[in-house]
Each structure stands twice: as C-alpha cells, then as structure tokens.
Amino acid sequence: MIETEDHATLLDSLILCVLGRRPSRGGAPSGGTAPARRATIAGLRHAFNLREGWTLAEDQLPGRFHDEPVRDADAAVDAPPIDRASLAAQVLAYHRARGRGPDGEATDPS
Image (tube, rainbow, N blue to C red; front, side, top):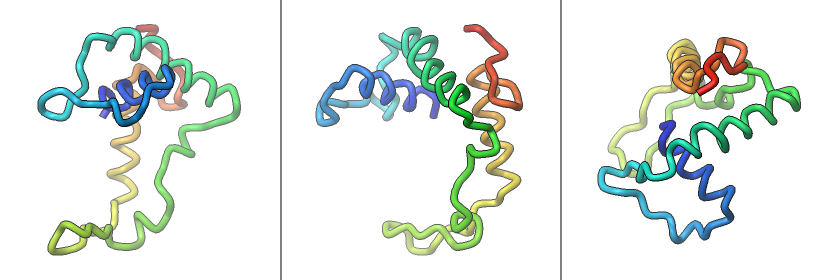
C-alpha cells in the first residue's frame, strides 16, 4: 500500500500523464525513486494536511462502508461490511509503518 501510494504521489507531483504509469511485475512500482518518494513527497503532503488541521480521527471511511455490504461487480457475493475496529487497527499500522505516532505526527525522521 505504501509503495503504491508513494509511486502515485511522485507521478502526481511531477505532473506526469496517468496513461504513462506502468507498474513493474507483480503490480508493485519500481523502486528507483523510492527514497525521494518516501522522504519527501508523501511526508510533505502529510505535514501540510496536519498543519491545515487534519487529525487521525478523520482517516476513516464513510459510514456506509461499515453499515452496508461491500458490492463487487466481479464477485459472486458481496463482501460483509468493513469492521470499524479492524479498519482502525489497519490505519494505525499504516501510520506506524510511515513513522508516525497515534496523533499522526512524525516519530521517525527517515
């Protein structure tokens, strides 16, 4: 998830055509610019959002994702609604992997 986000963030910041995006084998982006993406672009975007008042409590899905089955046109059956506690744990794990504490602030300068 982090690699895909970093890749898309880099391409968006460079104003590259979305049609030119091609993931490497296995669907993961190539790692040639990974240090720049991780250390600069995604971190700056997050710092901007924090400065503008974003809080970790806002890093959630709309209520319908927790209350209604998740519809998938390609699947034979709908997936159950997303468990709120499970999603909250995944969001915290994502921010930890990004070097952020429970309030969203950076804890790891790398």
